Image (tube, rainbow, N blue to C red; front, side):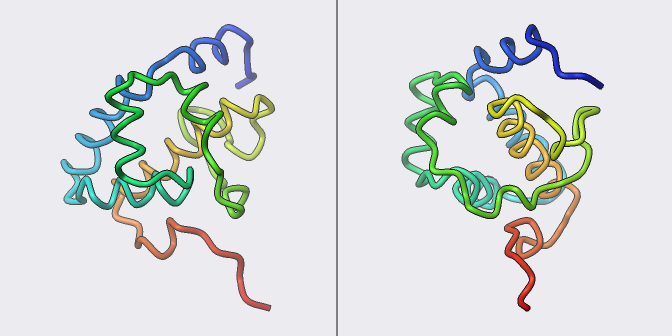
Length: 124
């Protein structure tokens, strides 16, 4: 699939608060916890749980949410397909960050070990 300006704009304007409950439902339904979800989001963005909840309460858009985030230095190690897109091939930086988050949530829901989800480079 190709990135489109319309698709990227729609993602940028979407509120994090509107998607977060879906993330929670997805992971809890598969036996994971909201605390694990918060840990994954914190790893990716550098936000504390309190900061994440402030973004939810403030109905922050994804554009605002990721503009203030301190992305994990290992986020580039997130690869694979999510929502029909290969995350490492997405050219729009914001859309890529949102898809990184989607991919991590998907891995959490699929029961992947937390140590594997929170990527670190292989030791030499």
